[in-house]
Every structure is written in structure tokens, then in C-alpha cells.
Image 1 (spheres, rainbow, N blue to C red):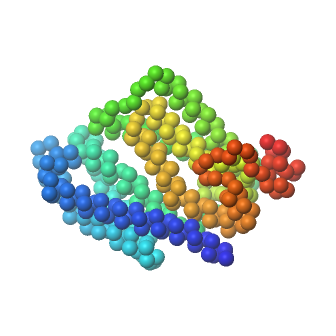
Image 2 (cartoon, rainbow, N blue to C red; image 1 turned 90 degrees about the vertical axis):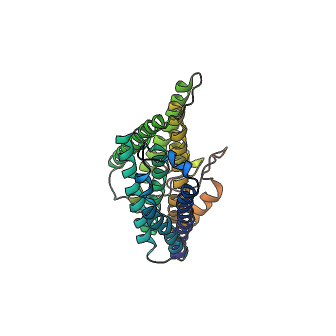
Image 3 (cartoon, one colour; image 1 turned 90 degrees about the horizontal axis):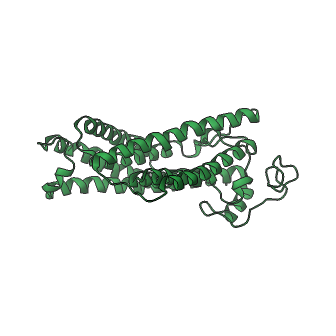
Length: 330
């Protein structure tokens, strides 16, 4: 029974990977077909202002490694073949190399930014699916037993590093690319104060949820340093994944603050990655470790939509209404 539950999440990831790599393979081949049949479209993707040579030199590698390679990976995922992981990493490496090369070339030549915008999401999705297919049921591991203060310190350190990268560094790069493409930004009265206030509120929810995870669950948000106990306290009484909800909201508020449409797309793409890759693996891991208690919680508390009233499990050590809870009635 446990093995079947563990494999359920892995199967969901494989099916999502098969769908994505099918889409990517077809899209790559269709893109090159469009450039062949409609030469006027090439001007939007040129890497040199006066020549098509650098652009067209990619066609064989793109169709072979990214187009056919993605379709082969999709088939291996669909058939649950052992080589699906190798194939996924091969495609991820190929698209990653091409994306970084195009970004570097565009940075120096100041041309070809539209191609960069299309390549970077493919690099991210391919890489994340390769990770998901590689780890599958081995992705989640309990945190080592230690003091509460050390667990909270680790959690806060993770928050500082991750938020700096995904909420500051990457949006900065995205807006720099937007300026190269001439994409206009959104502007309206009180835009920055409104987005800043909402960002602080959403961040507070994320920090509070991470603190509860550390104090009650005895683990961190990092999958390889996961909680020992099922947490149904604090914001977890209202929504199953308050940190994910907070993270998506933060990304959208950063997009609103900057007035950036591409940052908004980036934030929504992050939510889709979590929804279709990491959530199935995490939830099946929780079902294996906590059994009926988690299944009951999952039936009553939604993943993205908050409850109007708090959910409680009587008598559990981490329940918000348990006498033995270190948090008491919250």
C-alpha cells in the first residue's frame, strides 16, 4: 500500500513531464517550420543585424536535440522507461546551453532578446522536470533532530537566500530584458504603495507558516530537510500550502510594483511548476508518512483556496486546539 502511494506521485510527475516534453518538441519543430515557410518572421529572432547565418545555423541542433529529443523523452516518460531520466537531463542540458549562449550573445550584441525570452522558460521547465524525474520518491527526507532554535535559524536562512534570488535577482534580470524588447510597463496611481503593503502582508504569512513548520513540524520548507510531524496549526488550518500561496502572491506583487508583465508571467509559471511537479510528490509523501490523518486533512483543506473557518484535528500533538500543543488555542 505504501509503495503504491509513493509511486502515485511519481506517476503524476511522469505524465506531466510527458505532456510538457511533447509540447516542447512539437513547438520547436513548428517554430523552425514557420521560419522556413515565412522568412519575414526571421527578423524578430536574428542574432546579427545584417545576416541570418547565426540564426539559421541552429536549425539542425535544435530539431535534433530539442525537437526530436523532447519527443523521445516524452515517449520514454509515457512508457515509464528507465532511460527517461537520462533523456530529460540531455534535453535540459541542450536547451540550457542554447539559452545561456543566446543570452550572452544578446547581451553583447544587443539583439535577439525575443529568442532569449522564449528559451529561458524552456530551460527552467526542462530542468525542473529533469529534477522531478530523477528524485521522484527520494526527494523528501526528514530533518535531523536538533534544537528548535537551530531549525528556525535554518528556515530563516533558507528564506533569505531563496527570496533574494527569486524576488529580487530574477525579476531584475527579467525587467532588464523587457527594456531591451521595449515592452511597456503598467502604471497607475498608488501602484507602488499598494503593491508594497500587499507584499509585506503576503510575506508575513509565508514567514509565519515557515516558523510554524519549524516549531511544530520540526523541519524546514526544504524538501531534503522536511518536517517530522503533520502541521495543521496556524495558517495551515485555512489552506494546505500557505507558503506556496504566499510565494505566488509575493511574485505577483513584485510584478505589480515593477509594472512588469513578464515578471507576472514568471510568478505564475513558478506556481505551475510547483502545482504539476513538486506538489504531487510532496502530497504523496505526506500520505505515506501520515496516512489517514493527512488524507482527512487533505479532504477538508484545499490547496490554494482558503477556508472560512479554521480546520482542527482534536487530540494531535500539533493541533491548534490540543491541550498539549506548544501553540495552545490559536
